[in-house]
Image (cartoon, rainbow, N blue to C red; front, side):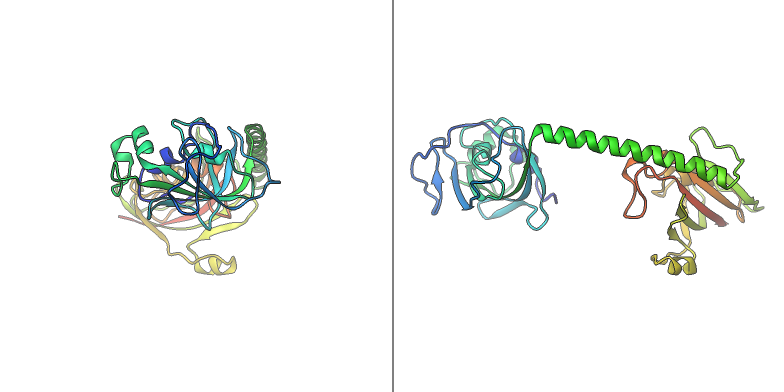
Length: 305
């Protein structure tokens, strides 16, 4: 879901007070119906056979939020999780409309902007809002799917179990890699291996020095995901990069690089075996580095200034 200009979205997307949805006074917005509590609504598509929204449900779909003609938020074209339906704060709010919806419905809800403003801090309403001018907040909702609190809890548990399994698999893969490659070096307290194959005799890597490093990074299964060696990059269908040049302690690098390079001299060659806690952890990185992946880098310190 893409954030837009204002801090309004979080407060405005919260589902609000459950109220009656019987027809009330005639709506002054063309094409809309008005409930007794003051919510204006219009259904463009209705799927009565679809699952109806209940309080506590997670809604997935598309939403465009605007204050009259001023768009405040939109994920149209990029459907995703929108919000969890909770208790609201005033009559005629968004929750009333959402509880009228079914999976597959498309609807527009118009809410009194003054009522919403009364629930928020002044700086949470957009600059275009003018109190007492009968402005409306319009929520255009395309409801793709509904998931109950129980289903969300089950999905969360399944996800956590999957992540734990992946973590265990990566730990076992590291043990196998160390054994099969006859690595006898001792890791540091955080599990980082620094295996020096060539000792340099130039200045040493220290915080504040500008260094240049040639590198090739790969997973424990040998999959290369990055390299400053153009031939290696081409052979593996990777984007070509130059050797990495940066000031030690100022670059946004994984901790395993900062720790592993420290103290190595110019001209040194080494293998860094970086455990997930010093790499990308549970998030992984991009399409090639999975969660909890141990990373291996063959590096050469080209210069230390």
